[in-house]
Image (tube, rainbow, N blue to C red; front, side, top):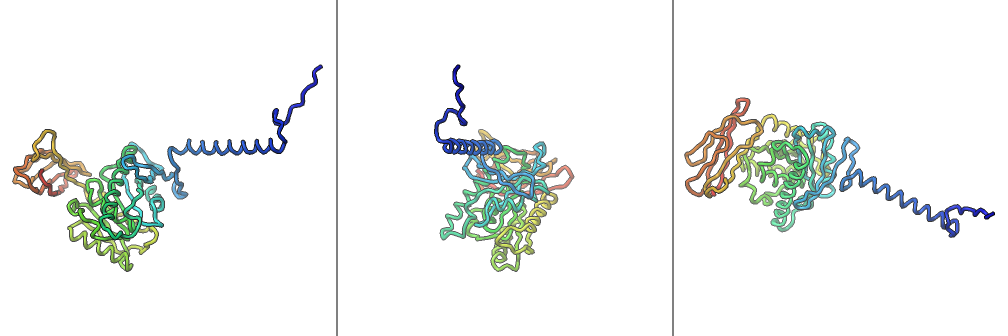
Length: 356
């Protein structure tokens, strides 16, 4: 009879017992770590999520593909893709402020009021003014492209109401918010800044894009030596351009952290704009195979437009919705449109364009 072989406690491994136990413990730890990482990757598509304990949804980080810029997005728990949602862009200030800090200051409002929240990572608001103002303007232009690319990226995956996109900047974030918002009034229904940093030289080239019908909210503490002076200069500059400025000098005076009370004022301003300031914007573009002096016009409106009357600044007009007009000569022409909405109210908008 063959003698039964005694089974080794850990297989046919003739190493000392303590080495075999150490090997098994090390292998077990590695497996647990790998399983944890796998679970994290399965639950997090592409990148880590930030958890805000005050709201039910995570803050999701993304990278827009056009310029590779990073941004954070908060989508409320009740988000429903069958409905178009407002989008609020919040611009951060210099350190210690950041996109993460800024978006956390807004998530509870986004949850309670029902809007998508976007916080881009910016360059032009990260530090004090450089000695070369052209460097500042170049960074603002890069931030403008990045902000618009972030909006397009969000629109690609969400149902965004194109007539309810707003932008806000706090402290140094007021610079990219104002620069981008004023230069693209066809994208932003309204602009708001809180305790703004301001330098008129940084807004060279913005005046020609300014829409006098775009509401702008400036919230600050009039008693603060620094922000009060900056905000006052900002308001004076905007009013000198006949901008539609709503000034609120009863801010909290917080220059080092966002304040929920100030943010609630901003949202109240945005809600007031949606209710009482209909958005009507004139767009023009050359039709295909047309002469350089020919343009087609259309209106983007937050209320359905039922009747139209166009004036092209050359003693000619049209009652059609999207007229095509040929101008007699190159030059600048004041274009005016009057629409009647579905509630019977009339709204007139003017815009000067250069032909061709």
